[in-house]
Image (tube, rainbow, N blue to C red):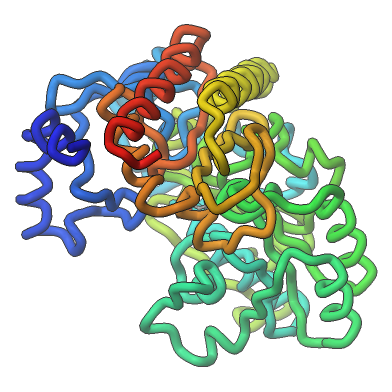
Amino acid sequence: MLETRYRERFARSAALAAEAAQRFPGGVTHDGRTAVPFPLYIERAAGPYKWGVDDNRMIDYWCGHGALLLGHAHPAVTAAVAEQLARGTHYGAGHALELRWAELVQQLVPGAERVRFTASGTEATMLAIRLARAATGRATIVRFAGHFHGWHDGLAPGADPDDPHAGLLPSHVGHVLTLPADLAVVADTLATRDDIAAVILEPTGAAYGVVPLPDGFLPALRSLTRDHDTLLICDEVVTGFRISPGGAQARAGITADLTCLAKILAGGLPGGAIVGRADLLERLAADPQQGRNGRIRHQGTYNANPLSAAAGVTVLELVASGEPTTVASTSGAALRAMLNDVLSAHKLRGWTAYGDESIFHLFADPQSAVEPGQAPVDVPLARLKSGGDPKLANALRLALQLNGIDLMRGRSGFVSAAHGPDEIAGTAEALDDAIGMLQAEGML
Ligand SMILES: Cc1ncc(COP(=O)(O)O)c(C=O)c1O
């Protein structure tokens, strides 16, 4: 039995998970790390690899939830952080690294006239919708079903329409309008309502493209929002610096009013930012004319923390050369092609590897007619987000881990610039072996 093999092979992880179940709600420290029968425990990582407590080496596709474009423990990042560590971790004051960090962001991200650092992506989107409401005097935020913008009350409604969050006030839910990613519906909404402050989206589709957007969606949404004097907020927390050095917007040739950043921005350390139009961000400054009334107050102990700045500057200086993003994208395309070759060779119905640039998703659902290489269409959101048939997707996750591959949430992956041809070929081989295991299990 696959699960028995997993339990035996990863016995130390099982013991730690049993202890964690007594200490942490759900036994985990992030919902996305939940795994059945238990998650694996890691003790070190370098380049494209992670080593677990069970003497197991895995090719890692979590890559720090997408934060590690250069792979784990990149020597330049490690050196920069170590150097900064020795100089102090918090000054409670401005420092030159935060200026250089902002300068690089402004150089790379379209329309970044001003920058305000935050401690996370969640905080960036929180601040973005506050700014949008203050600037427009309107209350409602349009968001798209299944797009994730962090866990705060302001944008939790609609993140997971099949699994509504408990603990949200009706006023939070009432001021968020969740729409399908359908331009006709957006156009109709903006034409008939006068209470929409902003439209926010993940610019490659829900869950970093698990549910891709229709072609041309982003430029069309930019025009629509501009025509109706509604702000466009691009949540580039995942896509920033990854889809292109200037994110998904630069690739699409558009400029949002506000952009939320995190992950790669801070080079694998905690950090985020909101950037965009100066007239909007200047609302964070004290205005002597208006006193405190016209101002949005924004604090945050760890904003522009020197350690995060050291990592962020090092990574963005490399990103500015264009090379890491291109290398990761090229490897991502090669990996998808090789995975689809494996799926085609096995003639499996309803399996595909799809994605965008250095992001990939595996989908396995015998009820679907999707062909290898295609993105699944007309599949319910929850099924897409679970990687297809949930039982099959989980079995595939276990089989891949037994073969040395760790996929993000068991169904997606972030390819880094450190993943080379050996890792890509090794991943395809592991998929082949994992499929063999599922066949032996009688699941296929
Ligand atoms: C698109 C998007 N926005 C916002 C967030 C929240 O960022 P953080 O986890 O840094 O709070 C995430 C996290 O995964 C994300 O994927």
